Length: 310
Image (cartoon, rainbow, N blue to C red):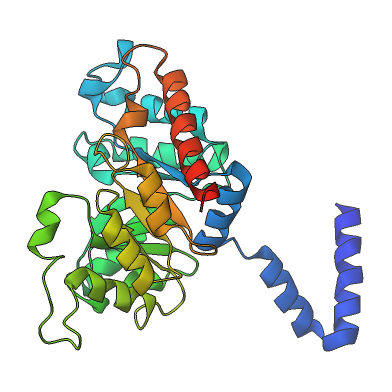
């Protein structure tokens, strides 16, 4: 402790001679600043050589072995998956509805803490798809970033910028806007044209432009684009060349991992390719965590190989 204090005094003395105590305080505050979501994303991508995100969508009826049907074991199941895959992923993505439906929000809080300990450099995206305005949005932002400690959250932009802005007030946090989702019903709105906007863009193209441009006040925004539509991923990447893309739909939903990488990955524009059920339920027996790891390794390696071929 004495050595640390002495070192701090030496540093302070040098900085005071260069620019005064204010320079010292600024430097120390910068040093103490926590990493942003994007910082964590780059770190985990490099350290784990991965674009794979494991989605945590716990369904007790599908739990393996002695855990089957027991909603009190949601934490145990998810923590085992996290421990088995922590060195393989770019991110984890817990889906809040799978916890809330079983009154397991407390288990989600425990899981968030566990992920912080087990994988401190891996960012956590809370898949909540919130989309309200004003004071309500402020409360949802507190829920995501303060209660659960998420690094990013998914949002619906349907109600406009004032439904997104409260999340951007949380420095360093990320927000992924639903843009071109993987469900068939996405065509009902996302694939319709804006006759009143110059060029008559499709709705999802307009969302991508807003996220790349005027809405992205502090560089915190990303987009959700489904893996089942690689042509649309390519279009979104053209409109939003620098934003991180969260791409669900690989695995059980049938998205093509190779086509996804070719369409979406660019240098300095990361993609986060999410797989949930194919990894979570790779085995129905007590070896589920080992089987999840095997499936995660396979998916990660396919993604990396596709990137290497670009």
